[in-house]
Each structure stands twice: as structure tokens, then as C-alpha cells.
Length: 213
Image 1 (cartoon, helix red, strand yellow):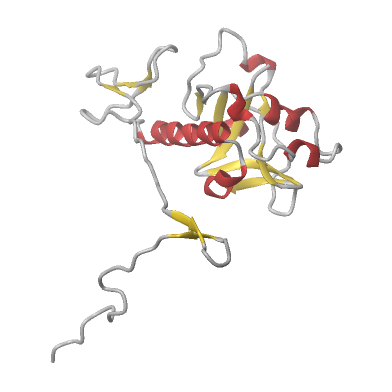
Image 2 (cartoon, rainbow, N blue to C red; image 1 turned 90 degrees about the vertical axis):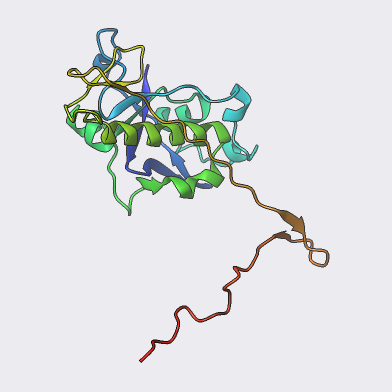
């Protein structure tokens, strides 16, 4: 049984849990899981399982215990037991009659910015959602050939590429590794964690020079 993350730009469809927002996995219709269905379409991508199985566990070992039983249904339980294999845009889900929960800011299900989720979900889950966002954005930005401007088509199912049927140019997702570091220490007095910051060399100066008359 296939499940998918639902995304809209850089936001993810989530459910409000006692400990915060948690990405939903939406069950796909049986007709979309057959062997005759392409695994890669505009607005719908397959995802690689990220890292080792233990990385799918929540950083908070008590996270599962704190979830009230009335919130753990078949859909939300899946988010803790297995990674999704696919991701799709909200527009794609609507166009292909995928059953979605009621989505509104006042409900328990709504779209939440990915950056808001990073610190509250397991590493591997965060990695998969990041993968989905980048691939869906790449799809949207690669609908035309960068060489001759002809509309592109998807490559064969086993290859993640956009292909120009005119000049045969193949465009692949770009690998964009990024590392962000922070220098920290416990405060010698309060023992609270501190982060090392630096002033820009223009700190304290006026934003602009006086106009010359």
C-alpha cells in the first residue's frame, strides 16, 4: 500500500499532534499503485529511503507515548512506522482524485513550512521531505529544454531526468549539498547554551552616507 507526502511549494501537509505538527502520509488509491502506472510524473516523484532504520525513530523517545490514542489512526500511525515512498504536489493530488483531509488553518490538518518542522521530526524524515521539495521544484523548473526551448518529457521510469524530444538533451536534478555549523558552549555562569556571534565590520555605522549638496 503506497503513501505520499503532500506538498505546496515549501510547505508540507501536517497534522497537529500534542507535541507539535507532524507530516501526514496520505494513502494513495489502489489504481495508482499498479505496475502500469509510471512512478515519475510532473508533480509526483518517487523518494529514496533515507539513512538507516533507527533514524526513523523520533528524537524524543517519549514521543509515541505522549500521543493520545484518539489521534493515532491508520494514517497517522504510518508516519511513525515507515517512510513514504512518494511525494506529490497538492494540485496533482486534487487533479488525480487523491482523498485529502479537510485543510484549513483552524483545523488539525494544514500546510506547515518545512523550516518550522526541521527541529521537531527525525533526521531521516526531514531528509526525505527536503528531497521531495527539491525534486518537485526541479520538475516545475525543467519543463522546457535549456538548449532549444522545446517542451521536455520524462525519461524512462528507471531514470530521473527530463528529456528534450527535439535535441535529446537530458537534464538531471542538481546536487546541492549544504552544511551549516554553529559554535556553541554552555554559559560558565548559567550553564545555558550560547552561540558564538560576530559583529559585521560596519556594525554601529549609519546605514547610508549623508547626501552631498
